[in-house]
Length: 86
Image (cartoon, rainbow, N blue to C red; front, side):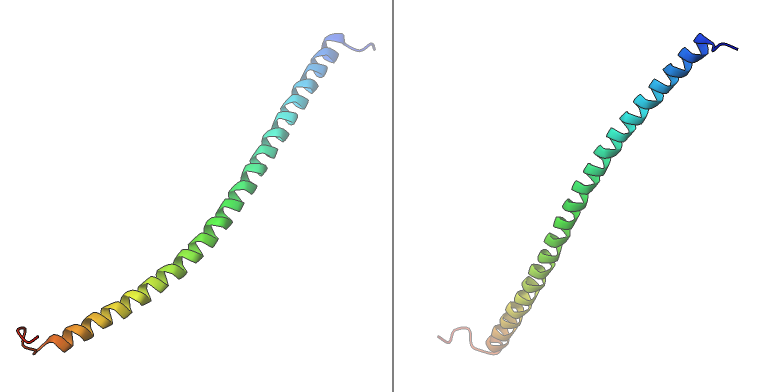
């Protein structure tokens, strides 16, 4: 039985469409992988910055505690003193 030229043509067209979609999907997947890699790098950088910021905030908190202690100490010394005394 001879091949059906219409069926053969349709099969070729479907094959081409499948290959085009597969290529497009591969390209889009590559773009997504690239974008995901970029996001991972940015998250890593942000994580490092947050760690450094936490350290700086801790130092600032300690400095504030020291300053508050000094203020309390100075105010405590002033209590009971004559404000007119030089």
